[in-house]
Length: 240
Image (cartoon, rainbow, N blue to C red; front, side, top):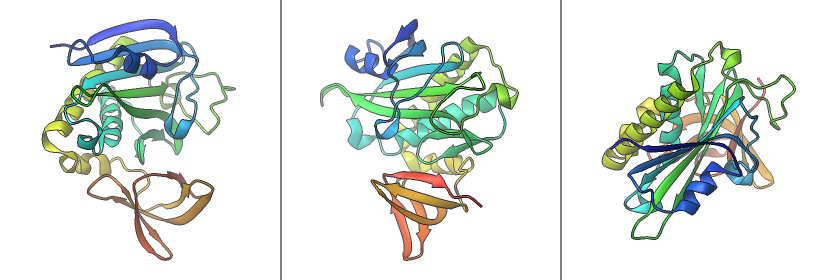
C-alpha cells in the first residue's frame, strides 16, 4: 500500500504533528511542510529552515518492537536519504555520524528519529531537514551547504517521492534483517573514518581518530588512552 502524504504550507514541527496524530492509519505516513517555526534537531537543538529553500519532511512507519528493536534506525535513515539524493545525481555526499548529511565538509541536512504510540502499537517517526537553496546570509548556527551549491535543483515532488521510497525500503530492510546487513553501505559514505575528530559529551571533549562503525552502529574512536565506542555524544571534525 502506498504511503499517505500530506503537504502543508506551515507548521511548528512535522515530527511533532505525526507523533501527536498517533499510529499511522496506513503502514507509512508522510508530512511535508514548506516551513516550520519550531523544527527540532538532535540534542535539543533547533533546526533552522527557510520557506521555499528547505525541505521539511517527516515519515512515520509502524515499528513492531518499538525502540528496543530499532538499533541503527537513525543511521539507516541517513543512508536512505543519501541514496535518494545520489539517485537524483547529487554528488560529493557523505554521512557524518550519527545522522547528518554533509558535502564539502559542511552540513547539508540532518535527521531526527523519535518513537510514539503505546507499547502494543509503537511507531517510528523520521524527521528530515534538507537545505535546497538558501540565501547567502542564512544563519543556520553552523557552516552549511545546499543542493543548489552542489549544482542540484531537483523537482521537489520527485525529491520527496525518492526520499520516501528510499526510507521505506531501507527501514523495512532494517526491520527484517538487522543493522549489520546495512553497515557496509553506510560505511561507504562515512566521512569521518580515518579523520581527526573531537568527541563531545556535556562540557567535556576528547580528541581522537575515527575508525568507523561498531557492529551496533556506535562510532569507534582511537583516543590516546585506547579505543572507545561512542553510542551517544557529538562528533566534530578537527582542523587539519
